[in-house]
Length: 198
Image (cartoon, rainbow, N blue to C red; front, side):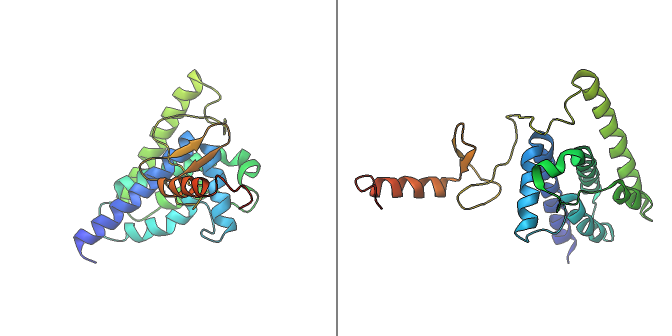
């Protein structure tokens, strides 16, 4: 791969990790449910942090700058560790969350930059966690925490994830649709409005 293509791959990988982080932080129950669904339908074999480790290993062995990806991945592993006590409640026993051993392996890496970014991310994460725990002790353990900023949603109609642009939701029913599915439902409803048997 050319240097430009490699940089693009690493950048895209980091964007995927950052999106996963947003969901894991802001909607941990949704993160767990999505993992459970991905594993049950065969699109994944382990948690996102576990799956990402093999891609990260490939990136690390290239000349591309993967510092941001290492930091994002480290934080995702730590969030999975924080969620693991309640994971069975939301995603079942089949989901294997990342363990600290993954970070330990990365820290022991022959790549000094990787080890430094892992350690820096660990320090930052625990500093933030300590501050959050002092002001809001329930923050890390509440898998039902809801926030309204920067969250990705999956369409309940076609399962596309994340829903791009406009999201249609049915309040109180936890139903989210992409524009295409919403328009399809509206068209179906208008075509069958006079004949409820169809």
